[in-house]
Image (cartoon, rainbow, N blue to C red; front, side, top):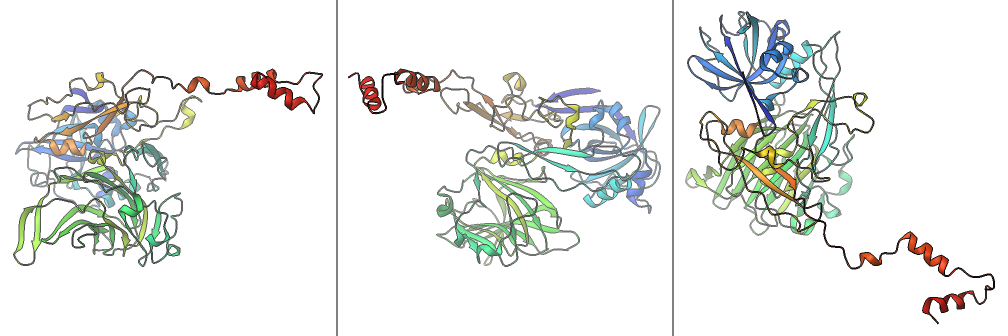
Length: 549
């Protein structure tokens, strides 16, 4: 077994092999009941496969976590939670006839039912041992295992520079495996260059009027939108700063009805036919809402389908970035979804669909529309001028450690082996990792095709020429390889910060003349009236002493 650590993410590659020993056809027995009756059940993604083998990336362990922890050297406290960021991998042998696994999609997630014999893992001999995963199925599985549904995530404790949010659940049976509460980092992007598109103070921006808008219960910020209410304002007038050419967009929202509403639209005021819009598609109310990004120009229109289904009446966390090369990344609920380039199908009415490269731009000062024909809640819409911050909206959840297990002076922190905030500079929101932590992760990637290729930029110049608060940053990017998507999905593209450790800034010449409480006391003693001074000549005597008369 080989265990290594790359940028705080544990890569655990096990030599254990899973052998198929029976038919894998789907059983008529309900899949959630099959998981409940199994000894070891995991959620996994197929990273690679051949005719005889496949490599699984374990995402979550539902049952048998203690056994799998022993086999993979996974810390036991992480055995029953989302571990997709830890790269726990198992090599799977496809010996025998398994009609379900052979045609599987690498992007599809499955639930595997396993059993252990003679120190090895086998797929259960019962039919239906490989089950296509869905969020609804996972909720049913957790219910079968005794858990209630998770509560909604609470409000993030910070709007930028890094905060925390929590959620809870309770056990409905005599014993449940896993944690009762979880915590995750949120809004980890820097405050510098951040624009809050909901932070408006003029009545005319609220359509038809401000009285149509309500606050969100349980939230200190955000807006509840009705079908008849929306926001409309010129960017230049509202913020006096241009909309960035490269950006990350962070939106927390909850949709109540399945409509064709617009979540956000940016329109070039000088050319109304040039706009960029994030829209809902009419869909099945049971499956949830669908999202697409639409860019329109005078030459035509291009639509970018976002491969997610937004559940109704649940909070969703969406992050989108556009870089200088018009590469777009989409993250949903803290996980990478897809990466697209600017070469997309554009529909022109006169010549049909063509393949062209178009710039994603709407001018520096677009008109902004939010919530048009949208019914639901929007907690935040933030724009960062750094596209590499797209993965910083939220992290994967970790078990919450009760404060009773800490010392009184120790600040409560979640279990997080990525060390995102360890040794950070106060208020920075980035991890202040030292050079030693990056040793071997420089800009010269390995050329082994089986490895993840990661490239780091050079450190930026310090944000100041002196003082303890000067910092510098650098960015990691996943390189083109067979495992590039795996690299992106793992959140390995990130921005990190460190202190420049510069000398203190020179003292100001005015600092020595600052009046302290000691100076004031000396002043009072110097001009304290003597016994022979009367109330009538007291002021005259003090003036003479003050001016040396």
